[in-house]
Amino acid sequence: MFNALVVEKDDDGKTSASVQQIGLDRLPEGDVTIAVEYSTVNYKDGLCVGTGGGLVRNYPHVPGIDFAGTVETSDDPRYKTGDKVVLTGWRVGEAYWGGYSQKARVKADWLVPLPDGLDTRQAMAVGTAGFTAMLAVMALEDHGIKDGPVLVTGAAGGVGSVATAILANLGHEVAGVTGRPETANYIKSLGASQIVAREELNETVKRPLEAEIWGGCVDAVGGEMLARLLGQIKYGGSVAAVGLAGGAGLPATVIPFLLRGVNLLGIDSVMQPYDSRVRAWARIAKDLPMNKLDAMVQPAVLSDLPQIGDDILKGQVKGRVVVDVNA
Ligand code: NDP
Image (cartoon, rainbow, N blue to C red):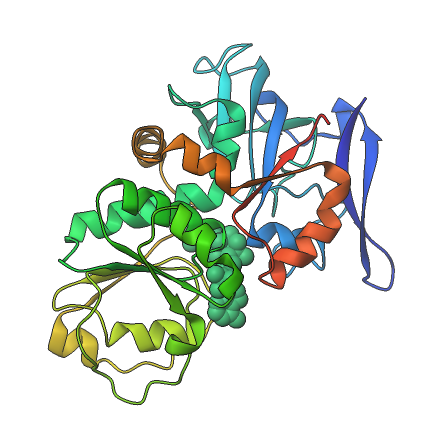
């Protein structure tokens, strides 16, 4: 028997989450069974621990969209007992049982070997948010980062924190947008040289083009903020759009694309092919300073998750929450 955070739905459609002891026979089918060591809390996890947000297909459900741990048994030749592995995406923790559990069983295709230079805790300090931040930086690099500061929105959040640390470590000047002035020192400690108040960018677009300021952008917020900043990107620059913490609508015009050649690059971490995942994890091990990663982490245990899930949906979590599922 082992511990897992199980979310159940009652006849009235109300969900509740509790730590329960369950057996291996309850795990879904898959090629590899993993002794999970760490998982994390991402925005989607907040939805799945709470109401499900339309992401959970069947109840009872074990959330946790990412995890790192050690292979216990494997029917796939690519993995053997004792291998360290990491998982992000593939709708694990949404449509399939996830990492808020001391054991998980998944398809071998969804795993990647832990890269050299990262342990399981560090891999989850990065987690889905940090993996996505790396994908965003790689997408900006592919399209060319222009001179000038790179803007990171939602900078105190999970994606924003890791994006800030990576970009600064690569030598870019970083401007972090935050709605929480008290996090300014934290964002600067990750390497940002400039803080932009959320209000400055949170107005409906008045002019489709403004002064060209940013050499590129990692945007975790979307909505009005994304619409506004499109008009401030330098000619030919790119925005890697990662999230919608500030809304799913996009009240923009086509003018920045037509008259400034701005690229809007959509980033999806969920369905990344194996080679791309391996490449991104190798870059994380190389380009993310581990001392900065330590500063982002707040620890948690399974029983903390209902509260933290709530907090992340309200935009109140700073950095990355790492869940020690065995504590
Ligand atoms: P966090 O909650 O950790 O960070 C989001 C940040 O956005 C907050 O910290 C806050 O930053 C800012 N924010 C929150 N609400 C608002 C608002 N109403 N207006 C403006 N800013 C706001 O979440 P994550 O970093 O983990 O995820 C960010 C987004 O990226 C989410 O939408 C998530 O679903 C998405 N995502 C997408 C992935 C993909 O594959 N495309 C993968 C992972 C995440 P501050 O306090 O600094 O202002």
